Image (cartoon, rainbow, N blue to C red; front, top):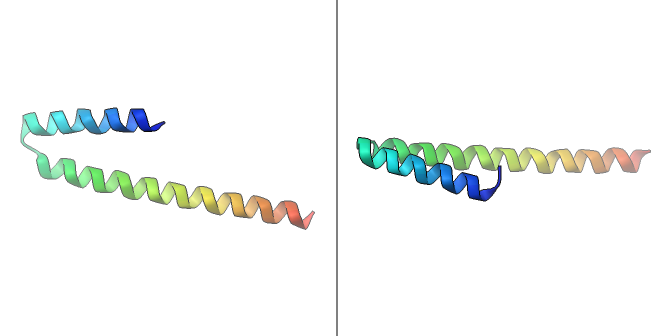
Length: 58
């Protein structure tokens, strides 16, 4: 997903949380989403490094 869909998803969750009164849940979901995105980025970087290392061995 690109940044537009992440923004749209966060906006929709924010509106729903304001209507239902679950502001803390929205904030915690935001932290979880940021953490998962960070983990995903790190794993992609590790994969790229491993691919480059295998290419250089051959």
